[in-house]
Image (cartoon, rainbow, N blue to C red; front, side, top):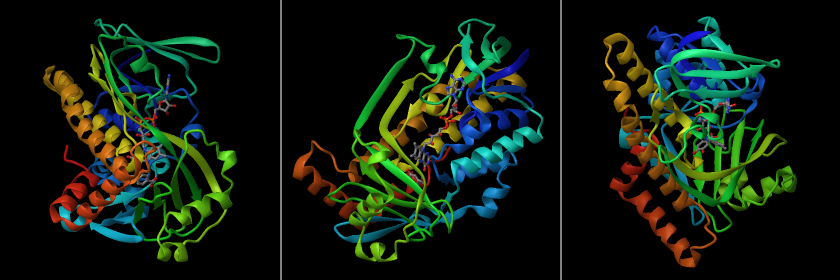
Length: 389
Ligand code: FAD
Ligand code: DHB
């Protein structure tokens, strides 16, 4: 087998990159470890920046998002028993869209199918080879048989635990990491959202977030201990804890119901530098992770796919390596700003075990500042709706 770009991973980064390359006439093959149903069953992100929606538009995969996605013009920050609205539309002229990652993935999968592009699911032992030389290839095992594909480039879009980044050894790669001392326990329920906009709550018992997937389906998160297991969190305990972290009006309006999904996610900031190793590029979670507080992970995967697709188009159409040479620096510039913003939102909103009462008071001062100063509010809004790319 031969292709121009072998893409490892069929998450948002790999699928979007595949469609963007296809639009530019660059053939590509996707290799994915899991089955399509498994990939679609992972409940993750829910908030898209305008730039991400524009990329879905560019590849003709945004029809359903425009019909079913919910446009939000603001968010609420809750602390000291009150909620304060940040009007993002007024501050930036931009909105964000609530539309689940599962739906984005399904729309991109369908676009790929319609275009007749090759995707190999349930590919075991995927391995990138010889990306330092001129003839990279990828091998994998399917149904007990080893296969190989030759390519011009490899795109490592295989998430944080993937094989692409793991195939590069120091000193060629440098990594930066912070692991936070707590996790997020999330549930999905077939209930109307407590409020029409998202509520981010700073509370003495820990952070809580009220978000949604539609006007009939809610997503709620509470900060939990890293030692917690979902078996320790029956639905009643979850709803009880969420209520304790919300203001009275929200408690009165909250509609509870059985959870249809429940999971715990650890929080981490992580960046690998550079994002290019010879003829292999990293994109999305394969190269960087942000804590979910700023809703940036999926949106960074999308901007990486954009930068990489444009760089590869320049390589094939203009016979110039300038784009691929600049890819890593360009992508990392935006990545680090999202890392900073996600770290800052996380620091302002969570209960930290080691910062004591002074840390909690400083958080309240920061929240008071952010919700009362036009300059601070605009800064938060500008980052939240997504920096330009
Ligand atoms: P992934 O989605 O991880 O996809 C990688 C793919 O590669 C997977 O399908 C995997 O099976 C495959 N793979 C892995 N290893 C191999 C291998 N060896 N061989 C072949 N295939 C392999 N982001 C936001 O922007 N907004 C949000 O609101 C938001 N909320 C979140 C909430 C939670 C609870 C969590 C956990 C994350 C959230 N994120 C959010 C982050 C977002 O989900 C990720 O950043 C996004 O999935 C990254 O996409 P990706 O394609 O880079 O990686
Ligand atoms: C969602 C998740 C987030 O981390 C966030 O900041 C906003 C929304 C969500 O799952 O909808």
